[in-house]
Image 1 (cartoon, helix red, strand yellow):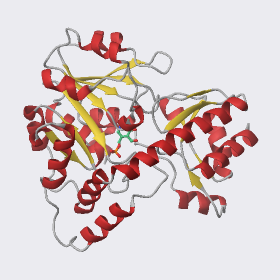
Image 2 (spheres, helix red, strand yellow; image 1 turned 135 degrees about the vertical axis):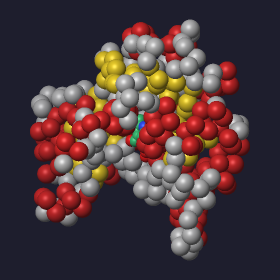
Image 3 (tube, helix red, strand yellow; image 1 turned 30 degrees about the vertical axis):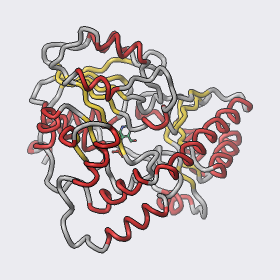
Image 4 (cartoon, helix red, strand yellow; image 1 turned 120 degrees about the horizontal axis):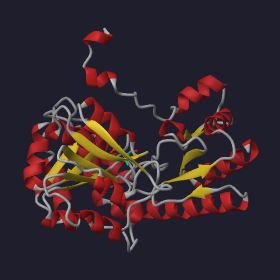
Length: 362
Ligand SMILES: Cc1ncc(COP(=O)(O)O)c(C=O)c1O
């Protein structure tokens, strides 16, 4: 059937995610396995969120509200934007797909960093776009080179703010310089899945403020990370009303589940719970970094809930050795970084177990 397939789909390398816990248990005959591979929140949703999910569960015989009315109103109020500026998706992954579906025609170009979040390239390639990949400098975006890579055919530039796997964001100065004289009809997509982890950083760009004067800016956020709702898949984009309208036209009518909408709304209203979790995760990130430092292991901390650890051997081998000990991490060879593993910050007990296992493996 290959010759019948869409030729753009044939170009796509399938996304390989972190292995599920149950699979690793079965494969290695382990009783206890921890997963620090998918940048998830290790803590369960707040009791209020669980209650909201239970209440919403009683009505799952009905289709969800396709317009996400309540959630839209609350997000708009909190971000001080118009409800019509929001596009909700089945995770922010889907928001990326909607953007490309709305704007990309065969042969259009997208500019992205290499390596960067894999969904940018998967969704762009399957949409028929030509990828223009600009290598990172160290683990940081080379924004001047990305700006130079923009041509008359460029429709979108992807900026992970901060990105995955690098964990880094371009500074305020770098973003300002990038946008200075930048064409107003090329979309700049700031992916802020890890936005909450950058809080307090003075060199972080207020992208929502940019949106006030630039119709070509899009900001994406998610409930999958600090709000711990990765399994319910809710993300959104903030854009100009015109761009949001175009993206919304590309959406399936009921793309965000009713459970997801209720949970996300309850999570927003329980901000105290999530502030505490953020504090714990930020503190634990320091604990892991200190542990690595003490063991003489190189790492890059970044501004997210994950760390890149440089290993003196092939990352695939190291990740496999850790797997055998019941610790799932990502080897970064999928991104071409053969001497790095990526580890998500877990609970204190999980982080301790990771550090112990890594020291044993190395
Ligand atoms: C940079 C980045 N953007 C977007 C996402 C997608 O998040 P979701 O689709 O769960 O909202 C992720 C998830 O890992 C990510 O790392």
